[in-house]
Image 1 (cartoon, protein in one colour):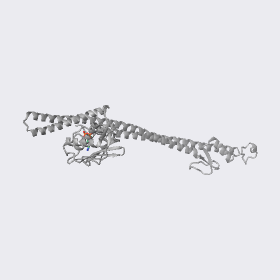
Image 2 (cartoon, rainbow, N blue to C red):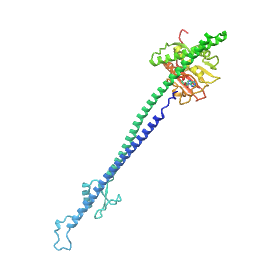
Image 3 (tube, protein in one colour):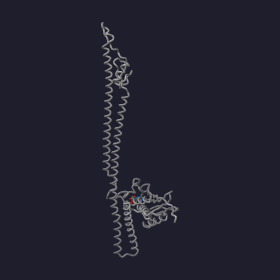
Image 4 (cartoon, rainbow, N blue to C red):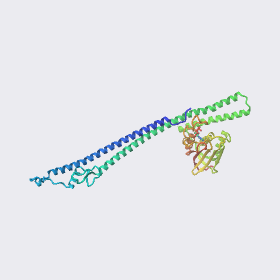
Length: 407
Ligand code: ADP
């Protein structure tokens, strides 16, 4: 038997491994970017410092040159006063330095530990804060850009992966459900056919008293009913899928119609077997509906309330108005549905549990059909359950219509 549709652990392992490798790769790439931008910053800071050193050198050379051309006070003839260049003022030296090295500034106190003192001790040479800050900002900008690009890359690739993974899981899930469906349908067809064969042989080969014949007839009718229901469901599903499920909508008063459907199902499933309680509003509730299709809906829900509950069953069907709508609720005290399965029960071929543990026969098409038909009536169907063992409730909401004039 095929196991219940689950994403393969192998897929998960591959997905997780690829995600981890990708994250590491991008992390490594971000680290490289940060390191490179750090190196670039360092190189550019060094260049600025070199400029400061050159400024110091230029100023010192100038001073030394002037000092060396000063007349020697011990020499008698000495240099001619007018030819000796005058010692520049600090303001002139500042102007000269800044013209050649705009990033360098003259300050009375050192701003950084390695700021050099000018040769004559007049001031310190320091780097202006603006270019340094600019470099620092540039670096953080580069780090930020690398990080966001990396994060975006990881996000984009992982997002693609998740989509692919989900698509693959869905495909796999549908395939497995289809496989389960085929074996379930085969089983559903074989069982009543085998039973009918036995009863036919018994009828034709044995002497039976009228009571026995009557009982066998009842059992054969049930088998035929089961086959009829299955084939009907299969046909309706095929029609719904191909878009050829035609509904003949006409005004329908739900109260009396529902009582009739419930009575019919109670009779079919064995009088009293459902423990059915019908609570209908005393208001006349009318909708536009196809009575045959809507019967299929209620019959499927009641059939499930029977199949997925143990004796003694307690099934309640309520019908009430809710503003512009009509609410029809079928609830039971049966096996219930876990929160994780609730969103999937209306999916085609979905059945709770796996083939090994399932006790109840079914095809996983009933609720799919219920949803299709209700939706085609302009309504909606919801399921709720407080979990396994606490029963389930299916709520159908249909648009209410005014009471037709003739009635
Ligand atoms: P089927 O009954 O043929 O398996 P359905 O489409 O009618 O298919 O139901 C899908 C699944 O939903 C069922 O297999 C069952 O596990 C779960 N389910 C439906 N109705 C009930 C209910 N009343 N109580 C508990 N489980 C239910």
